[in-house]
Structures are given as C-alpha cells and as structure tokens.
Amino acid sequence: MIIAFTGAGISKASGIPTFDEQGDLRTKLDRYFANHHRKKFNKIMQQLIDTCKAAEPNDAHKALAEYNVPVITMNIDGLHNRAGSQYVIEVHGNAEKNNVVLYGDSAPKYTEALDIVDRLSKDDILLIVGTSFYTSISSQIKHIAESNWAKVVIINDDAEHQVRDFLKNNKDSIGNFDDFMKRKPSWQYNFLPYDY
Image 1 (cartoon, rainbow, N blue to C red):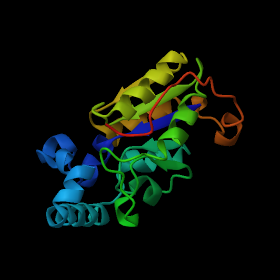
Image 2 (image 1 turned 45 degrees about the horizontal axis):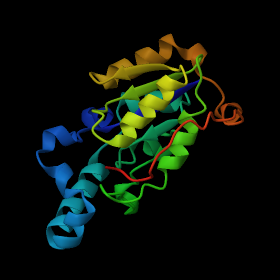
Image 3 (image 1 turned 30 degrees about the vertical axis):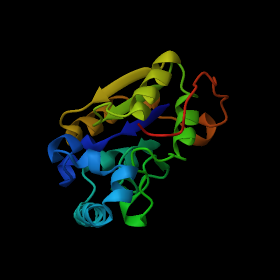
Image 4 (image 1 turned 45 degrees about the vertical axis):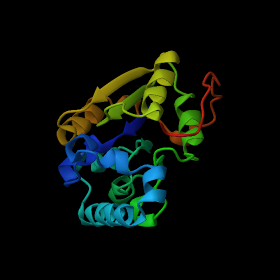
C-alpha cells in the first residue's frame, strides 16, 4: 500500500509559494496573532484564499488522484480534492471552506491521519512530498511509518514530475484503501492533537 503525505512543496508548481518563501507568514497563522490582530489576520487569510482559488492542481496532484493513492495533506489549498483524489485528509483544513487549523489550535483530523499511518507495515510505502518537517505532526507521521518498518520515500524537489515517475515505477505497491483500513493499527503512537 502507498499512502501519500504532502506539504506545501507539492503545490509550488501550482503557483502557491511555500512557507519558507513567504518570510514570516507562518508566525501570522497562529491563534494568538488571529485573536490579537484581527484585521491583519483577515487580510492574510483573504490573500491565501485568493491564491488557493487561482491555483490549479499540477501533475503531482493529478498523478496521486489517477493512481488512487490516499492522501494526508498539511495543505489548505484544496488541490488534491480538485485533482480528483478519492480519499483526502486535510489535517489543517481547507482555506476555501473557511476551516483552517492555525498553529496552537486543536487539529481534529490529526488522529485520523495517525490512525492511517499506524496501519502501515514493512511492505508499505509512505510517500512524503514537499514537506520541510517544520511541524510536530509531520515529524510524528514520518516516525510512526518508520517505526512500523514501512519504507519512507521523500520527494521534495521537482514534485510535479517526480511523483508520477515514482508511482509509475511502484504501481504494484498501490493497494485497495478499504482493504488497508481493515488492518489493525499498532497503536504505538502517543500524541497531542495540536500543531506546534
């Protein structure tokens, strides 16, 4: 089974800059900032929504959808859904649906994401695309997969081309998600459902 875990880098080719390219934006997507600087925060959120609406899925999003790979994403851009992916967990919500999880907020989809990753085993692959491992969520997801002996593959450069190539070369590893979810998780993770 292949499960994809994606971060901002997968959407770079769609015209959405990564956090690293946007200076201190990450510090402004914080609950404290949102509560204490409402006008600035609303302006930032509107810019993010406009950027997400203007973007189109690139070939990395499309390849994951075409190969029917389940996706856990940190992104709020909605591009996996728009590409046609059948199963997407948006850990940080969706900007267009106005349900973005800010730093310091509870991340309710986090437990669902961990439950999926915890079902991976030695014959499975966690395909990580475009993440800097800045958040505890991203580091923990990678750690759980490695602890379960799943193969972890990281594509951080040229995702628009590399993802399709990887899936084409590993299509025999793509499984049925419903069957995969019948597996029992190892329940080895201990977490707080917050993003720090």
